[in-house]
Image (cartoon, rainbow, N blue to C red; front, side, top):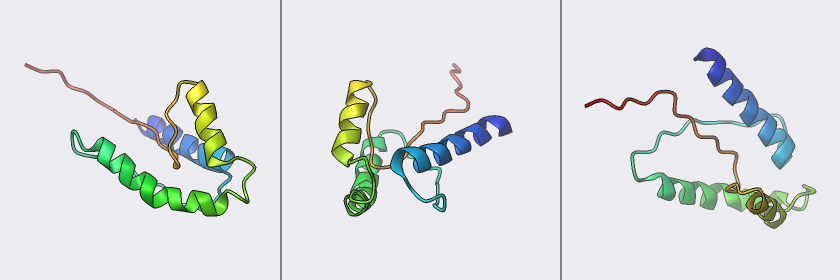
Length: 94
């Protein structure tokens, strides 16, 4: 379990620095939305964190629109922030 979390943390770092061109000093968080509230949470995050994307877009060789188009071609969802799902355990009891 510890190794799995470590790999997720490394992936967040690599995606943030290489994909978004962020400086290697940033904060990352784990969010656990209640069932059914994930779309609202993603919209709120995009509203808050997407504002900074337009300011930093001129410094980055990749624009928000180009990244969204590339993600759509690959069949992935694109967010103006790094997002990884993590479901460590599921229980299907009776």
